[in-house]
Image (cartoon, rainbow, N blue to C red; front, side):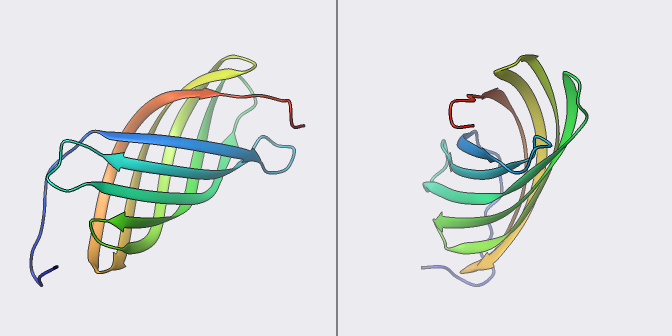
Length: 128
């Protein structure tokens, strides 16, 4: 049961899996992701979806991600998520990125958070 005035603070490692789909011919993408935080007293699970716009055509490019986020545990909340990042494409089918993001969601309480993450992106052109 959630109580008014109860807050939780802290940091936790997050595992995020994401799939993307082409959006036009400029390299922009639709995004769908699921994430979970571990090392916390309660299991947290969130689903996100939106779009990522890239700026630059070289190996190094910047991007902006605008998504809607639905947290399903420990409390149901929904709201916007905005991220900024840099990606380095070290091959035609793979790249490495870093991103910072912020979100504010509401529902069974109000939740706000910031994140910094790094990862790898692998691409296939089979469906094009």
